[in-house]
Amino acid sequence: MRHITKTNVITINGKTWWINARKSGVYSAMLKKMIGQLEVMLSYHSKINVIRFDLKQNVYTDKNTQITVFNRRLFKWLKRHYKLKRIGFIWCREQETAKHQHYHYVLIIDGHKVEKASLIANKVKAIWNDISGSYWLPKNCYYNLKRNDYKETQNAIFRISYLAKARGKGYRPPQTKDYGTSRIKLKTAKNITLI
Image (cartoon, rainbow, N blue to C red; front, side):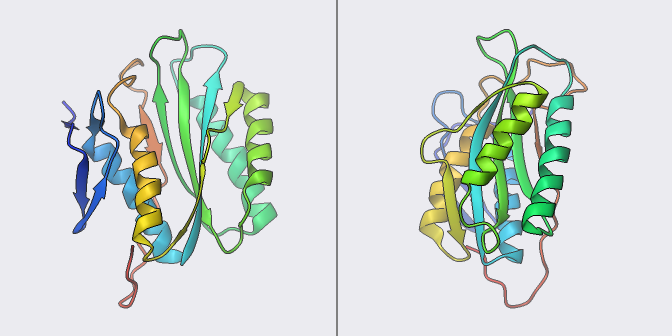
């Protein structure tokens, strides 16, 4: 059984972060991977842009095929339009009272190449509407993080921790994942100080 924590803080790599573990708690391993991808992106870029949005499905599916197709189309466009070398992402699948699942999604990209995310938000909407459903952009969903800016990174981590919540997970076949993240490896350099 996966470990659920209901504490309001988590310590990763010697840094302690406030998290949103209210009500159902969060899956700690899931959250560590999510925060890890923020740290990894900051090891490559001194500034990153973090965009949080929701993707709603029109019908239930056993698999996450729509997310795979969505990622492929969005990443192809991002790499072509912005000349990005790497794209970080986090998504989680949830199903609570609705008959079909929805996805919470976080996109993590080079903040030097992308400063304003409105064009990306429009592209996300167009791609998802074409694939499977509706798109929703929550309030205050953009974060421009700078390496070593603990306060703003803390704000983004608190928001992202919601994706790791225990409630709504597990309503899927055993072979289907509840979440996914990019698998970018930490840049190894002697003088990089993260967050």
